[in-house]
Image (cartoon, rainbow, N blue to C red):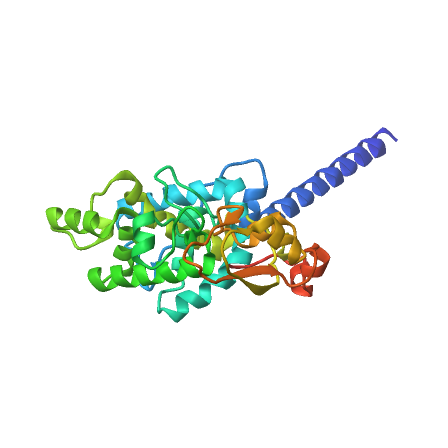
Length: 326
């Protein structure tokens, strides 16, 4: 009897150990089969994976050079783990990219330059410490050189469509002078003169091999890193549903002309709040337009009274599917 009990205990022990082994094996297999991106969802910290090959505006990035890989790695880490800002860039891009992409195409500017806009302003009408303004961060003198009106009442650097056209003209000029889109992007940051002076002194023709100031040294890498993260969000831990993105706001247009126009009254006459008027037309910088030159301006208004989300969102906007690229 004692022998039977002992045998039963041994068999039971073997069965339990076998089940633990099977469970552990299954667990290991599941772990191996997980989506690589799932690593970003646990509490561990992982280094973002660098691509073996990548290009900017059709020009290859020399990923076989150690300082290029390390420069890009720094920015990949920054955007991958800077969750707050990077998430906002994705959300805003859904509203902004459809506006600027066709303008880039119209002027023959590579589509990758939309990521330059992200780096410049975070896709907002930002103001820099140096007083650069708008989505494309124009300084006042450069903005006026490329046809943008900037004065005490009007600042067209804050008009997305008009400023994008000016940025395209500026980038085309830089490319024609420098012969490289990568160099044009760097010169957008530090100025054509500053870039060419450094390249000449160092007898270098490539941005990647030129020693530059700290900001410009990081600048193109930041654009490329932003492109990599936004084109492959899930690889870097960003699982963003389409319904979480900021939708485009349908608008209609009217004109504003005359002098000494009270914009509070203009808003009421057009059935919108003053806040909505200024939000949709951020290039107006005052509540009273003296308009001494008596110009006529095109004004955006909501396409229907009120801008409730239920009236804006399309079926695509409501989708809970994760976005795969931007």
